[in-house]
Length: 242
Ligand SMILES: [Zn+2]
Image (cartoon, rainbow, N blue to C red; front, side, top):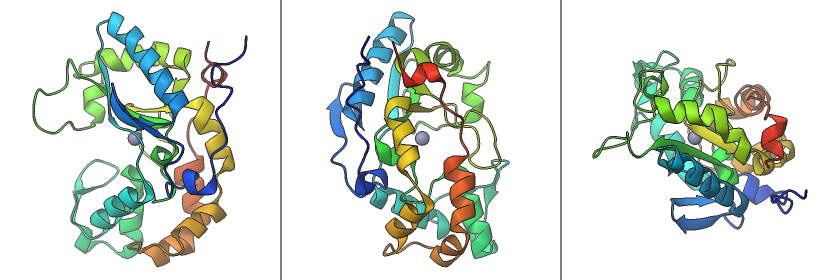
């Protein structure tokens, strides 16, 4: 049988690094911006989840280079909360530039290196158990067996690969900490990661007003390996969904 995702094209260098949005489309139901193949799969998966009493809602999908740059710089300057590997709040002003860069990377990608640039990745919660008002936080504890998203967590663990999705940050590999809410659509994300490189990232960052840019430039090959490449391998089942 031919894969319904056969037309998942390899992204251009500008698309891979979030500097173009020609590979994604905006959708109202659910409200998100994704590659059309990932969107179709998300809609199909959401219908199946709904039949099991889970209302999947993406709270973050495509993010541009500029948006990621803003997040990065705000964290570096202490304008957004910076957390350590133990989730404790850090005082950005008390950290060296290298420490700030390392702390940001635990929870946020370098602009140009976010999987959210690809239109293949999204952060999911269950609307039925999400807070009725106020901000929706993405916390590990909420995806634990007694957490508010436990049912979603179990459902995704059993079924996501049927629809081509997998969790790249499923466990601590020394880089990005586990993000059980972050789902990646393998038929788009696999080729995207294969097409990325430290050199491409370097060229995307070359002209950007990146805080801590000198440290990043110095450490780029290591940072690229640790925070971009070191993720879960996608299950072959996710690469060719039924
Ligand atoms: Zn995410």
